[in-house]
Length: 310
Image 1 (cartoon, rainbow, N blue to C red):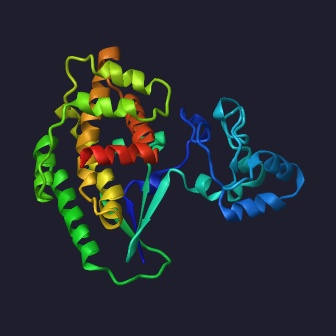
Image 2 (image 1 turned 180 degrees about the vertical axis):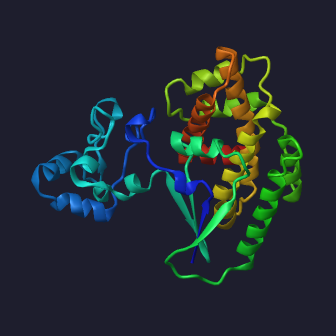
Image 3 (image 1 turned 90 degrees about the vertical axis):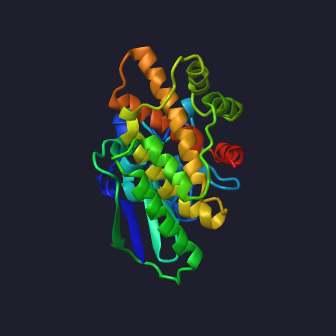
């Protein structure tokens, strides 16, 4: 079986205490069965501490403490489980995050979710167009159905179109919609924000910022940001085109969500420019991280957006 990863994937490593938005804060972490069994039987002080800080009913998960912090996140924002017993003690979610995997007939595709600031930084700092790297991995290769092979060819064609830097990104995106036989809807940003304001807000200040974007005189995407947008569209096609196309018959969602996201990200970039007069890499990373955390990492929010964009 093939393992397909973005060309920057192997550069990723957790920045631990340097992270401004720790994934160990505010997230309820479910514990897989194998890890739960280890935690139930672990001896010593660490074992006692584990069992005292896990909710065992239904799906076991860590009991968050003050400020919704994981009980094993110490004052230096480091993981006591790793410090006391090594990374192999982590449950599967903690080991994997922010990695995600999608399994298909002949391959597994692995990527880095952008709710992680380091993953977002890695992607945004790629100078050249993102490419896929292929490796061999364990797993049975099944016969590929024609529907899947068709989606693969379509995605390759979309990537080629969207990475043609001889044209502004707006033109490339229109061409990508045409390749899919659909017309790009020119929704006003105010309509998008009205939708988002009705959804669950996961981070403090998110909805306040969205409301402030509505007051700005200019929220249009600027051509100097095209590389950011190109990389984001590549990511969305990688993460959603095959998986949603095969499981939900909604492969077009990746492009529709891309257009939606560029409108929103353009507004958020303009908001930072309005406030500070400049837009740094750290600003761009933070806005992309917030976009992902709010829209991608809430299943309810993502489904609501998909329904609105049909």
